[in-house]
Amino acid sequence: MQQLWSHSALFQVFAEFEQYTRMNVARRALIRSAGIRLFLRAPPHNVLSRPSSIVSKSTDLNLNKEVDSLVSPATIEATEGLTTPFEEDATNDDPDSTQYDPTLTAMRPVHSYTGIQRVAKQLGVDLNAKHYTIVMNNCVRLGRSVEAFRIYVKAKEAGIVPDARLVVPLLKALGQESTADSADRALEIYRELIDAHPISSMLDGSAGPNGRIYDRIFRILLFSPDNKKHVPIIFSLIEDMESRGLPADTNSVATIKIRIEMRQKRLFTEALPVYRENRSHLDAFGFFEVLQEYCRMSFVGSLDVPLITQYFSIVNDMRLQRIPISPEIYGLIVKHVTIMAGKLIKAGPKDHAAEALPRLVSTIRRVHDFLTLDASFSPTPMLLNQLMDAYQRLGCFGDAYRLWDMMYMSGRYDQITVNIMLDACGYADRVERARVILKKVARAGFRLDLRNWNTWVECLCRGGRFDEALNVAFVEIPKHGKEPNVVTVTLLDKFAKRNDLSRDFLHRVEKDFPQLWERLPEEIRKS
Image (cartoon, rainbow, N blue to C red; front, side, top):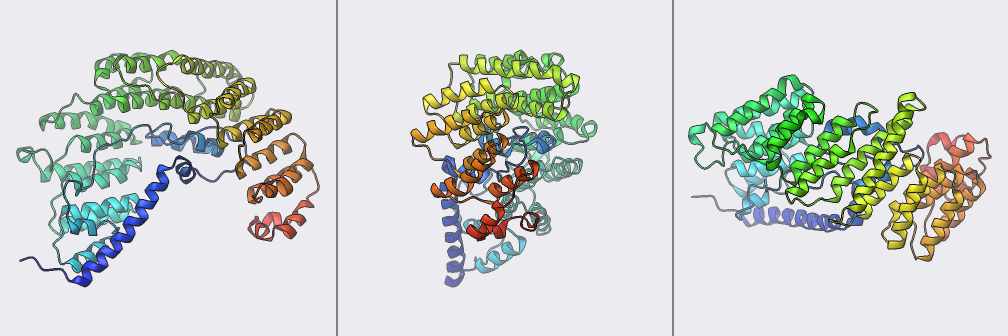
């Protein structure tokens, strides 16, 4: 007979779970708020250096690593989420999602092997695969992948037979690494899984590798740096799927075949036969991944500007299959145009860059035309912000300002919109135009946040209005219920040094804002 739980053990476990639940309910409520979600996901803003590109979350980890040095903190906020419109895995990995079990519930706050042992001892229960899976998922969510693998080893030592649910957390963790070693490790886990569940035992299709398992392994292998070794293995895995009775005419398989062909051929026109053969199996996420691969292949690695018509021919195939065109589809191409603009700026006045710039301007204008003529959806402020930022980085101040006028007249602007335009005015030496923008939004009752104020300070400094910038920093900002911060003072110090101006304002900071003074970098306080 199963050992009865003591009242004290139950009380302790469920008290911990109640606190954990309250924290998560509150956190999820905050995340559901668009503004707070934006704040939580955006990195600290640094307006001291010229932003040179936009980067968003992407399933293509290699691309993200390549453009890390070109990130625009000011516009990450504007574009965050634009390139991940669909969940990679819409199914629930939670092992207790279909039934209530208090012992599983007790594992939800646990994120270590010692924690598993403690709860098991308190409740007097024998651990099963579901208990281990919950805690391994917790470890991966907290970035503790090493502990998740340790728990997996301990589970096997305890006699737990690996099943599909147990290995999913490990594949999630390996999918975030994008290394040759992670690909090899994923294959080891796969072999352990198929050894534990040979084809003859796959009657219900739940314990051994399923479509989700294969999909995760495909992605890990596709992004391995050792493509020559790992990409061919994908085709043998597809054969394994078919031998196990799993369908191969799925979005996952079609997507992976198209992406592999595009990488091997390097030209979309040469990959067209495989694309046409498999496109009917693509869903919204599959098409998005193909478009992402097209951008990765066409934009990254050189200063060549790809054919925009090829991109939108894929988009047209989505329409023919009655798949809605989301704002993220436009956001993806705009993001890559902006990345290319950053490369052109970094390259300087070189012949190739000089030739590419007009083509890039033409490309972003054509994207805007497609967007304007597409009656299937209304562009979001987030997408319009991204488009505006692309214009201003390409030196198209007039285009950016016309887009701003449209957004202002329709009331579809936010703090990020204002920030982008103030930044554009600063680099285009249009201080008076920035002043007009601020007057307009003030009449509309719009309140600037501190990042807006700091960008206005930077705009004034770039326009040679240093005294006015000091007044904004130490008079206007406090007048509006805020205080200058480290970014404000560092900006002023940077431009004072650059233009050989007096830095007496630092004495004012030390006197009037002592707490801020203590947070300033030591090189500023001692200079």
